[in-house]
Amino acid sequence: MFIPTLERQCTSEQREKFLPLCYDYRIIGTYAQTELGHGTFLRGLETTAHYDPNTQEFILNSPTISSIKWWPGALGKTSTHAVVLAQLYTLGKCHGIHPFVVQLRSLDDHKPLRGITVGDIGPKMGFGPNDNGYLKLHKHRIPRTNMLMKYSQVSPDGTYTKPPRSTLTYGTMTFVRVLIVHGSAIALAKASTIAIRYSAVRRQSELRPGEPEPQILSYPTQQHKLFPLLATAYAFHFVQLAMMKIYTDVNDQINNSNFSRIQELHALSSGLKAFTSWVTNAGLEVCRMSCGGHGYSQASGFPRLYADFTPSCTYEGENTVLMLQSARYLVKCVRDARSGKTLPGTVSYLSEDVSAVHSGGSSGRDLSNLDFLISLYKQRASNQVHFASDKVDRGISAGMDLVGALNSASVHLVSAAKAHSHYFIAKTFVESLKLLKASSELQNVLHQLASVYVFEGIAQSSGDFIEDYILSGSEAKTIRQLAVDLLPLIRVNAVSLVDAFSFRDEVLQSVLGRYDGNVYENLFKWAQNSPLNKTDVHPSYHKYLGPLLKRNQSKL
Ligand SMILES: CCCCCCCCCCCCCCCCCCCCCC(=O)SCCNC(=O)CCNC(=O)[C@H](O)C(C)(C)COP(=O)(O)OP(=O)(O)OC[C@H]1O[C@@H](n2cnc3c(N)ncnc32)[C@H](O)[C@@H]1OP(=O)(O)O
Ligand SMILES: Cc1cc2nc3c(=O)[nH]c(=O)nc-3n(C[C@H](O)[C@H](O)[C@H](O)COP(=O)(O)OP(=O)(O)OC[C@H]3O[C@@H](n4cnc5c(N)ncnc54)[C@H](O)[C@@H]3O)c2cc1C
Image (spheres, rainbow, N blue to C red):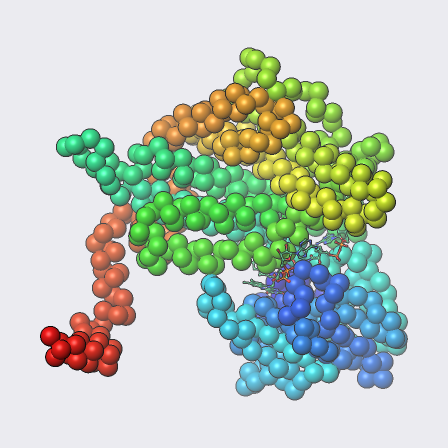
């Protein structure tokens, strides 16, 4: 995050000064924003940067225990520099959070500089090799030119020039949220690869006496666990491509001082980062458990995959908070639509009157038609957003201010943002396949995946569709069965569909997911290499077990 922030927030002179040092690994940096007391509420960050016009320096300080920077990756022992987000004070006035480049350690002996207390925050659930650290600043001085001044400036005499948009400082977070959508796709693809390959190798139980033990991949329940997740990995692959395209387009506009779509980008990236990381996080556990006992072994690769992925739901914007950000924008769009404004592409459906299109229960609707079902996802999202928006309006009519009304409706707002994200993902998946140049056989297989994603998405949220009369109960039941009917068809290509991700064994890091399927021999080899097996009799025997056993044997 250090380099993307410099690339986005530096003036051209600052780029020339800092970026070559980064690209040549002459300095290593981190993004120091979160503090002990604040990670979500950025306007509450307490680190200060007071401008001293006499020396043309900023004095950075951690005034309280809660202001100590806490969590930044590689801050503890590795980074020589950091982008520090601090409250800017100049000429006696506070101008809010701004980014500053701060050198932390000497480039000669790597020792922390004067005024810098830095270290590792201690062991975590995962990310063992990453020295997430703490940073306490003691009136540490940096040159005026170390404030990143592309969007806002402090002149030598201390005069402040404000940015065209205060939220431009938040740009790197948006970029990383977009990357996390990609990270979710990759993590779910890895977990699907491990679980499906292992399920093709593992044979267990005897269905009928005398029959050979079947591959566990042949059990409908195993297929029902794994194939919707496999389809989700493909869905997330296509949605991260679409998300990155939108990000690149809007970022180009921002670079040309066109900020018209910055809100839409923030809302979409927030919703997709939260939705994809929540779904992936849960999916990793389903994949692990589908591998039985061996899934619980470090050899499976699942413990590390889960421990390293699960913070995606927290960092770069805690998921609930990001869903609320997304929902807040959707409520704003409903208002804009009501006042006749044209809505941007990803939310234009909110100005359509979808309620008249489908009323649940009418017979003869083709429930296997994906375009039709995507229109139901649209209706569900529109209904949820309008329902939540009406809640907000009622709160205001009851005398609440906007913040109070948004807060009281927040449970429904999160549901609305989830439905909006789900609709975007399902629609993008189906539309991406239409644009794909592929053989009819391949189109057919991918259509099966898109179908099981769309069907299962409705089955798992059928309450939303039934409560709003989008589907009748019997139609929801039919769609649930359509997903189950597809499983044996997907079974035929399941291993090829994970091979298509082409993770090398060294990347997958899983004995269960080995490309050659040679699991048992390599599990035994892996176990024998376990540190505990360096000696037949572990040294601890002589200290504890031996004396204990001998003492008790003498009593026999
Ligand atoms: C090319 C490369 C290809 C590569 C390909 C290979 C890829 C491989 C893929 C693998 C990769 C793996 C992933 C990477 C690893 C990850 C490592 C990351 C480690 C983790 C790092 C971190 O963890 S780093 C800290 C993150 N810490 C937050 O994330 C704080 C959240 N907290 C807030 O973000 C604010 O606190 C919060 C809540 C908005 C309220 O902010 P606030 O109070 O100031 O504002 P309000 O809510 O009042 O909103 C006031 C108005 O600002 C608007 N607005 C707010 N944000 C905006 C924004 N970003 N953009 C525009 N507009 C924004 C809002 O929409 C309102 O607009 P309006 O007024 O019009 O409604
Ligand atoms: C592995 C890891 C790496 C990290 N790397 C970095 C890094 O490199 N740089 C950096 O600056 N930070 C980093 N962070 C910090 C991370 O960005 C924060 O932890 C994250 O932003 C969440 O903030 P928080 O911890 O204050 O959680 P909190 O906001 O305290 O969340 C706690 C609970 O409060 C709820 N909540 C908070 N606000 C609201 C609200 N307005 N409405 C409703 N509910 C709310 C949340 O939903 C959540 O359930 C990292 C964290 C981790 C775990």
